[in-house]
Image 1 (cartoon, rainbow, N blue to C red):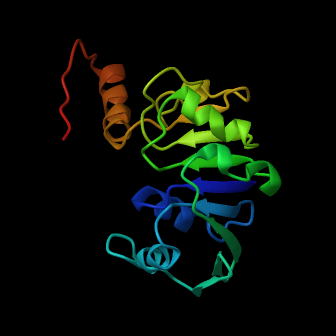
Image 2: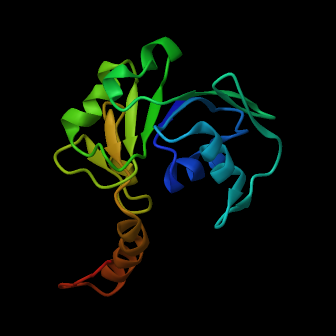
Length: 176
């Protein structure tokens, strides 16, 4: 699977660390408007996940690890991204900027096969998935998907178990 990451902040870098080195996934591009050298530094020295394990370098607009080369891009608009040329199967949309279907559709129009949004969508998309709660509803035709919010992913599986075992009539949650 060929993956591109749009937005290389906390979530984008975490996704890269998870995918880097998986034999079934190739991260072909990272798009972020921030300076490549600064992004490399943030990837190398992560205060939460610890130092990056293995070689890490920048060479000719590519992030290079022991597992391969990833093209670094600096486009502000998804329509300018070369997803078709790079044969991107999935875009991880992690900028926090593009949350509406029309904005996410730009990745598909640029040639990506699917988009996974790392935050809740602001309007109607194909599916919002919470693992352990509604993942059985994900269908092959869903091309724009959100993985909900970190709060939802923490609370929903616990609430599901409580509801199935004891029943929940109503509830309130607050997040900051």
